[in-house]
Image (cartoon, rainbow, N blue to C red; front, side, top):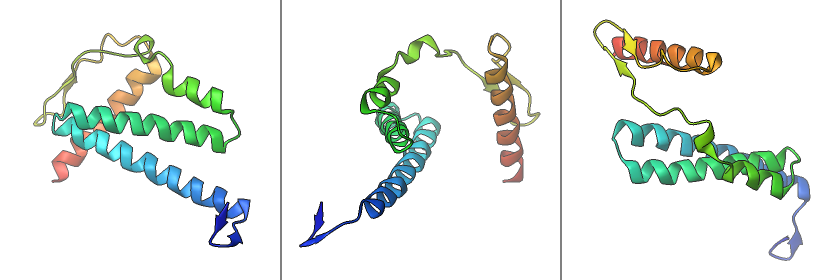
Length: 124
């Protein structure tokens, strides 16, 4: 690893990789959100792949092996997927569609996110 003819310290390389990985993660997450709002399936899928790769990089930076990081990227997401629709009444803030979710933590997170979304939309 050289920069021109000068060696680049490993600490500098690691710092740059950490910054790149975090920025990549945030950008991919934001693109996923925007593409969901715009109902752009292709952009969502691409952003999701990039988001998963960013998680693999984060895992490696935390000391996991490449194999462990790849397992996380390519694990069977369908086993944990929740498929369905959520309806949000923007006038009342009421929502439906999370009643049948069996994972209490996921249900709580969705309810919180929907409440935050309602408040944000009310402020606009």
